[in-house]
Length: 329
Image (cartoon, rainbow, N blue to C red; front, side, top):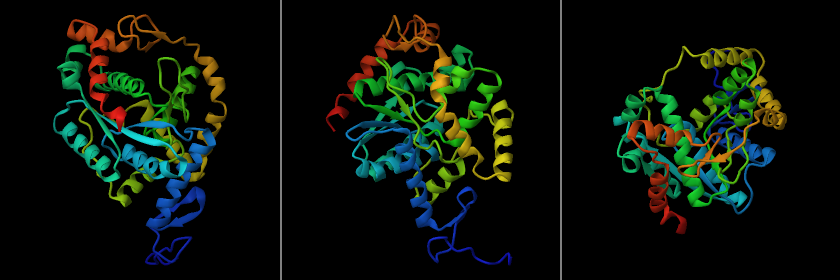
């Protein structure tokens, strides 16, 4: 084939910007956009992620994945009859957090989506770097703990039916494989397309469950979505077991297009088996009444050790005040 030949879209005569090998399609900008939106729509339908009349809280970090998530859900919400509210958490990681917040604000303004902003400085009088330094724990561990707590708190106070996360295929599969290899089968139950709502926990949905990282990035680029270009200064890639597994999965996918999507669907099909293996009972934290598998939640333990007192209850009160106006939107 002539290397200079311009590939045409499978649906029209426009130049193709990408080739989706597992679907055997060449797609222009317009049809790639429709392809991604249609796949997200089918994912919502296949796994029963959203019902008509629901209010969904979308966690928006400022990155490409959550930007793609919010854009697709905002577009599909009109067709499927649900409401979307965005949540951004300012962790106080210097210039990175400033740019991430700016991107989230621009995105929500462009899409006319209500945005809830929670600042760690406002809630705890400290920011993530200080929490990391004083706790002497890995930054990603502290960050994940704090974000999970604040997302669930906001979701409960807003009374939403689900929290949408921007985890895509290439985020989830490496952890699924790792948990299987280490025989932590219960851990796989948290990595499917959705987790169910319980009394003190709002269920998570992952509408990008069958979308790859490259597809999410290309979608954000085509749509011109505002995203933070810098990498989080705490991010470490290339040396972890998860990254080695990711590389292996990409090698298999290159030889057998569609393998990763088939793998993800097989996991989702058997998710109830993994839930049975979890064997975790959810309790209420003795300090803040948020969900925990022990007597005191991880957030209250962390803040008690670092700040001298468990801050869960104080944070919930502050979040409630911040969200008071959002409930009426």
